Image (cartoon, rainbow, N blue to C red):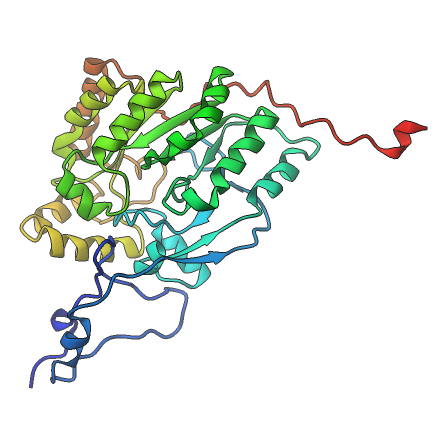
Length: 369
């Protein structure tokens, strides 16, 4: 009788989506597994799956800003108009957060998206609170603020309108050319030293980008976006993230050189991180798209993480440890000097916080007496 083990089961992968598995929600006590009864029924059912549509779910947010105390990142507050991301980047560090709302970090993360239509109003209230101390806020730190649904929902633009009105500094990291829609706001804010934009460029290989980041802008489009932003006077950086040993790390210098020519003034990088479910999803993705490299890539990942797949310690989780990780760091530093790019911080720490002014409140009746 045929073995019904997991290795013989068909993949739930869908065309145009990044994840090739849909792991169970880790907080649930039960899980569902496919099982082949030996008659080939699963192969028939999964043989020609239709494209998986995107589902939008309205979320009534209770607060606008998310706060953190991590010494590894250059901001202590962030704004996230969306949960989940349609770009479908298989390596995305935000995927495990979907389990907090009872959804899988796999295909659910990129097809079942939650949006927060009341975020701008909440933000205005929080910025108006007495005693609020302004520091640069990261827009879209968890998922991309310019993913495709932003074209119609426009939550990110409304957030920028609030920040501009308050004179509040903002940093943006995106993989989307959609940021150019808000060029008018960003140009005005940058003229006051209140805005900084960073484009994430993972690879210049179109085939690799399409498999790894299926619904993000093409590498060429991202570099064109860097050029337009820089030409408009908006400080623009490039983030090579994630740098995957044995898969895209050989492109590091070429990405930085091309980005510098496009007008980027800063650059940074982040080594691949595989916490929680991301390890399983990345291994499955490698087996499907790059089986000839899979063992080598995973071995190098372990080499840069002290023999494990992930090391969560502050100070090392972004760049790794060991000879291979140190080599990448040295290559990065040399490339910065060679191409005239600044430091590894891409989060706009030099933005001006002194212009923050809550708009004048509506006059109260007492003032008329």
